[in-house]
Length: 378
Image 1 (cartoon, rainbow, N blue to C red):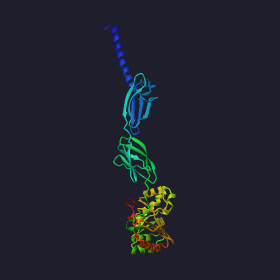
Image 2 (cartoon, one colour):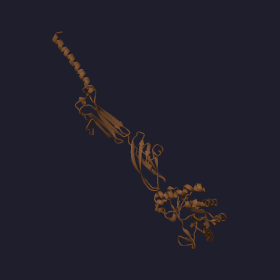
Image 3 (tube, rainbow, N blue to C red):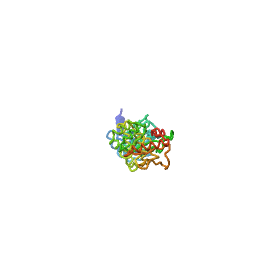
């Protein structure tokens, strides 16, 4: 081969080798776009990353992202996708070489409340799909999940708003505000059943036990309901055990006899709960109904009674006043169905003897109070 031809061949070989080497360096140096999606927060992160080799810094310099529908002002971009969002983007590293990647994501929808069901004491919240964790009780404790998609929020004396932080099996999260209605008030009862010409003797407080009352309960089988103050029970516990043994029934008249309408909801609830908690252990009976001190009641007092587990507030239609006797609500004679109010005061035994005589003359028969109440109020 002539020397000139041989020189051209060698030059071509060197040029070709240079092109191959240069192309390889360029491919190595070319930047690429990386992305990462975090399901716990629905956050998508995009980044232009440099290539390798001596040309990489030069090729990578001044690169910024171009994201369809989103602004990016540097080599990195991060954004949160909404639950249920479909994303299909072309992400390019702005430059003359056209480095780009396609990102396609579908974020699962977050769990939603599909419906709520209210009953006497709870609000059941059902989610649109199974959840694995829910925070939202009044004290921030996790709520037990029933059937994978339902939690129950306790109804309380007052209405409140609960914040539900729900997490589903795909780690999708949502925060919801749920309004929980207050407990419904217990009913007020002023009269018992008129059947059998029955009347109902209910005696309040308990500070002055009376031996004559016990004798009448044994000899005459007089059914008596005592609405007792817890503090009075503590002071005369032996007598009240004898009262129960004689067939007496004890019900709730609060811990210390305050005007419940002047207390907070928590205070009224504590007053009702004291006898409900302690009388079973002390006297073997659990109060199911109550009488508010001074006859003072309002909506919160009635709802607090419900929260304490009581079914009704028992009022009265006739009251015994020492020295005057029994006065009815309408100033008329005693009638069937009357609930008769007396108090554990000195002289109660004599008052009861007189009352029984009057009832007999009027052909009225004392009967157990609870038996004379409507079924839903016992």
